[in-house]
Image (cartoon, rainbow, N blue to C red; front, side, top):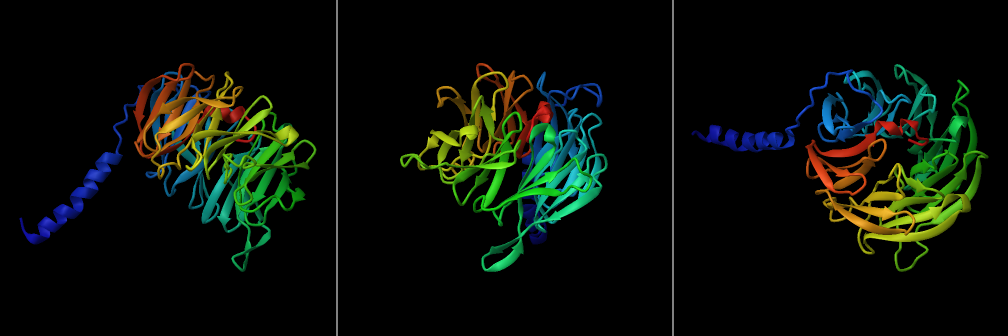
Length: 410
């Protein structure tokens, strides 16, 4: 073998091996598009190849894979109210509408250069997405993703420069009031938009919500809006029925277990208690938003370890499950089952490296968790939490059940 051929061999072979390793051997069920329902689908984002894996959550069978052309690191998905359409964005500002029955992209829109977070109105008429660059929020017609309005972010001083604030999160609030709450990351402001009015006016502005605003979520009825301030280490609380600021809840009042950075993600509430992970330490904070009351910091990985991103409640049992993906350099392999009444971890489930984004099937029969670093989705029994199946996937991250289309705040 000549020198040139040998060089080509050693350059190309590792690339081929890497591609083969990433190309998970998925066994697809014999279900033609349109022959299954959309009320209990588990839709998995495959981060690196920019695809989504569609799994029937009733029999845990893969029914399809859809490519998101032009997307980079897809995230922040939402569903249409009937569960048929899946809206998802690439971090590079490309927004998609996917038909889960036909298994194809049916609309695509460029909304920015660096994008984070999206939401859909309860009536399914509008989708709203946020941009880091340019700092703005884009309102689109959910039918064809036509851009109807762009709301520019307020000015903010960052590292000595005046910039247009980034949009940290967008959340539908107030239930049938049909409102959208926009958290402006750099400005520390929360704006409320009236989605009933075709001009989409901003009807309320709150200032001083905290430094480095991040994710947000609402209680089941859409009333209490909870927003994480990463630099201020607190949850900012608003009553979305009255549009009144209620107060903040520190995630580190306990000196022994100090939560440094709250990250509510989709959040989880059981009765009057809500839960949010802390990225700074291995804890989950429990609190009562209606009373603006801290309840407890619940240890997961431990006091000196980074925490998780996502937490999800069981649909029919008083438990929540949290990840701790930032522990061990995003290689942590466990998720934590927390008893919402005892406020303690009762089970630790072994998933695989990069265990992230737990979610349940529609009625809680099964629990799904991504193993980001293990290239697989792991399925557990929703009652006993016994592992029952693994499905190969390509760098899976987000897993969301289509039944959550009926929830406020997704």
